[in-house]
Length: 42
Image 1 (cartoon, rainbow, N blue to C red):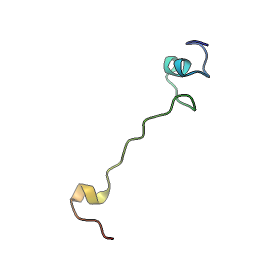
Image 2 (cartoon, helix red, strand yellow):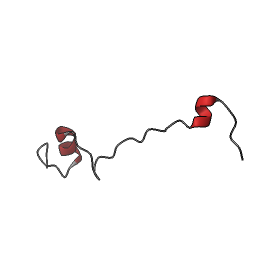
Image 3 (tube, rainbow, N blue to C red):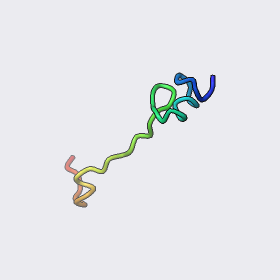
């Protein structure tokens, strides 16, 4: 259980990988309406 253990969060950080123990932060994508500045149709 350390930097060499790929199944732990610390091991994922050391190996620069992602998985169940180390989730990626989800970026919120801008919609076309937000880029154009038009109101959304309901």
